[in-house]
Amino acid sequence: MTSHENPPQQTNQFRSFTSKFKPLFILYSSSILILLLAISFTFTKTSFYKIPPFKSHFILHPPFFQSLLGFFHRTQKPNDPNLISKPSHCVLWMAPFLSGGGYSSESWSYILALKEYVKNPRFRLAIDQHGDLESLEFWEGLPQDVKKLAFELYNTECLMNETIVVCHSEPGAWYPPLFQTLPCPPTGYKDFKLVIGRTMFETDRVNLEHVKRCNRMDFVWVPTDFHVSTFVQSGVDPSKVVKIVQPIDVNFFDPLKYEPLDLASKGKLVLGTRETDSSAKEFVFLSVFKWEYRKGWDVLLKAYLEEFSNADGVALYLLTNAYHSDKNFGSKIDKFVRDSDMAKPVEGWAPIYVIDNHIAQLVLPRVYKAADAFVLSSRGEGWGRPLVEAMAMSLPVIATNWSGPTEYLTEENSYPLQVDRMSEVTEGPFKGHLWAEPSVDKLKTLMRQVTSNVGEANAKGRKAREDMIRRFSPELVAGIVRDHIYNFLDQEA
Ligand SMILES: *[C@@H]1O[C@H](CO)[C@@H](O)[C@H](O)[C@H]1NC(C)=O
Ligand SMILES: *[C@@H]1O[C@H](CO)[C@@H](O)[C@H](O)[C@H]1NC(C)=O
Image (cartoon, rainbow, N blue to C red):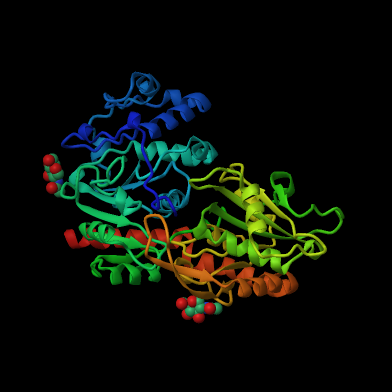
């Protein structure tokens, strides 16, 4: 969700190749995607050696990649009857599919939902990598069937004039991109049937450049009412703004399917002391975030350390990764505590653990399963994927009641954390915008409440899962996306 804050860079070596778009066919070509697919399929799935060879359009790839890609050269001819009998319309979804992070996992959630739940679709589905760097680690952590689907959708060929393009990324990546990435739409706006921008922001407004870019789109899909109102207030044409909520895979994130991960074996203790009495199970708070100021980790640490001591039988686990910083989170926490006015409790600091090694998507549910409560005191969120994942896992969630998450946080399904005031963003591309300052005192009260009233917390957790199923299940959201596309096709006809 943060990939837009600092424009990601593409290496020059792997350039995007609009030149290879033939007048008739769109051919998908972000080279690293192909490389990853090739690695995966040639080295780990030998059966894929046997797939029909694919027509070569990789003339601009470095020779090394060409030899890897030799396996995939397509022989199917455009006038092959099999191709023509399929729907002529295409939906080409362009997103950071291979990057990890917010936009990446949410774009996958749409694709998987559409693939599974739109029966006899009137369009073919295609994907391409766009908007951020690829991560080999992320790709390797994807389930095998998702990798296979990526390969299939990546190789779908479409007529440009029959294609609806969804640009699922920050507007700076849209045509013409402000940084090096395969542009979306690939050849500009007029060549395609319809162009949709799918984006969101974490502050109270959209800047002028982004407003201009949104208004070039035929539609702008945003995930929440918060975004509908901030986009329209910022100057995006109200007739273009459509709310399309995000799906959460409630079958994958299902607490009944998993055993808890042994968090203590994964986490590094960075403050306090480890529970020595192994018979007493501690109450585990979990937070998942990129290490950036926006995530309000300072608010969380202050509330946790002021409210609890080593005598309380609690532990805080931070599943985090670096965001334009080094990975030495232990020393950052240490410095934060030393620079603060907090006094060490006589019983000692309540323990804080950091998990900073990569956790594969497949293992993630087991991390949630190992927690008793989830807490995230962000200053602003687009959607808040870890929040809905935790809620689908029936965890009681404490989260700042501002921005995207107001779409789904209620008193019944969670602990909405009150905001003290709005504050100005002081650095980065959103300098001058406003976001929220969550209340440290209210956070202390809520964290104490979750540990002391476990019955209430569990009831909220159950309601959270119910609400996720009722409002954001893949089947439901696939229907919303399908209807929007069909409405457009019907108007065209
Ligand atoms: C799309 O373009 C192709 C080739 O230029 C053309 O044959 C076809 O009729 C076009 N389709 C539409 C719907 O304009
Ligand atoms: C959370 O925010 C919403 C929208 O601003 C508001 O209606 C609701 O009362 C708030 N809930 C709490 C508990 O502060």
